[in-house]
Amino acid sequence: MVKPKRTDRRPDGEPRATDFVESLDRGLRLLQAFGERSSPMTLSEIAALAGLPRATARRILLTLAHGGYVASDGRLFAPTPHVLTLAGSYLRSNQIVAVLQPVLDEIAISAQEIGSLAVLDGDDVVFIARGSPTRIFSGGVDIGYRLPAFCTAVGRVLLGRLGDAELKTRLGAMNREALTPQTVTDPKRLLSAITADRVRGYSLVDREAEPHFRSIAVPVKRYDGAVVAAINIGAHVDRISTDEMIKRFLPLLREQAANVTQRLV
Image (cartoon, rainbow, N blue to C red; front, side, top):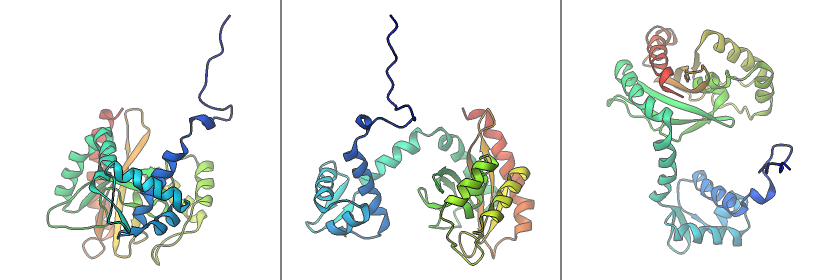
């Protein structure tokens, strides 16, 4: 008699309740809450931001403190540098970062502007690597920095990998709050722009995510043609025009993206 195979998922594809660790989920939510403020917080403030009861937040904070992830003076709590080991695990184990970091360094030197690598995370893009010429300093594209996908060049490139029907649904459901006076928020215009960018193979966004910043991006594809990331060059509007971006930066980005395709599996 053949025994039925055990499955860890329900018929609808969702994890079974017994496989969900609620305490771990709450702990991760609490750690994320620290990113909402730039200064230490009280227990009540952290609990409110994480959407947790005060007593639950206290137990989690004490557990995190025991592991070295949180420090406290008895009233205020703040994350410690040990939290960076969590991000470090991702960056060190991510093949895309390992392959693209030298590429970004070359792009930055050639263009004398910042080059960045981003991936899609929900409705946001997250920058996971960067290359920068030494003469330029910018805190806006640090590793881990997040921006809405709909109004960024890397985000539109990554959204372009979706089919038209899925893209239309996704755009209609996401928060499309304007970040600058130039931000396009109308879902029909965005759908048209992203599908056009998909055809031409790049996206150029001018002052939609940041008031004085424009960016051009191309998709990064793995060996089978699937889009797995996006690379861009961004610059202050006073340094370069959109036409110059297309003329100077687009060929550089396309060449470097094509060079890594067979190395990504």
